Amino acid sequence: MAEHLASIFGTEKDKVHCSFYHKIGSCRHGDRCSRRHVKPTYSQTILVSNMYKNPSLKPDCTLGDSEIQRGFEDFYEDMFLELAKYGEIEELKICDNVGDHLLGNVYVKYHREDDAQKAVDSLNNRYYAGLPVWAELSPVTDFREACCRQYDSGECNRGGYCNFMHIRKPARSIVRDLFDGQELTIREMRRVERERRRQREASSHSHRSVREDSHTPSPVRSPRNRRRSQSPSRY
Image (cartoon, rainbow, N blue to C red; front, top):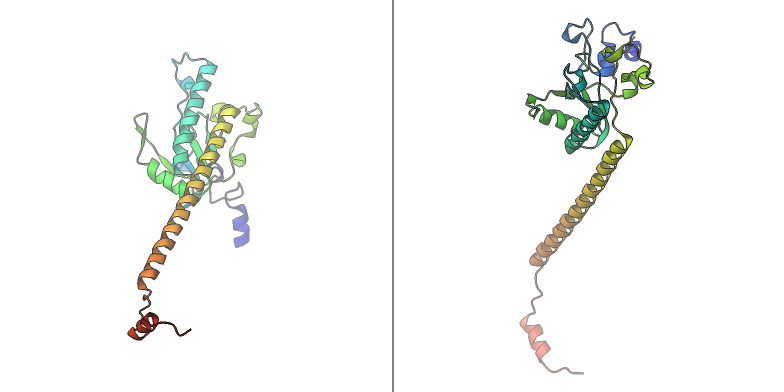
């Protein structure tokens, strides 16, 4: 029985837990959902809600598609550089849905769970564009399950109100440069840490040698030995 429940947890066969929340970390019914939303106590992934403001959603928007895309890519870069301060990023996804539960959501998956928790703790004390930031750990582990496959192929007929993620993508060159820069930064940090560790070990070894020398009794020659050394040799 326990194995069966574990196998269907978070799936559509699970009548107790919300499959949408488990897959996407968000549900259109919110707290009114008839199924349970199990919030993780630890995770590599965090959700920062309603961060991206798509200007095309404003009735008076006069920007063209290329201008909107450039603005989005600036936002993506800002988010990456800011979120990377907390740890190594594996994936960064930004939703372009218009449904309230997915509107402007930013998902970031870190390499380490500790870094994800550190990011949540810090971001919840921050403001963006004059508004408080709201971040939480997310149950999302596989973005392939969370993303709308029809949207990626241009065939989603639900539009922005689709319940699966519609991920807005920056130019590949921007993503490549950001992740390459992160890798170089991590290598440099590791090099600096190795150098500091070697310096600490060398300093510790040096101090230990000084202490050992200070506690080693110096050879004291008895008067007999001194006289013997001062007397002429017999040979």
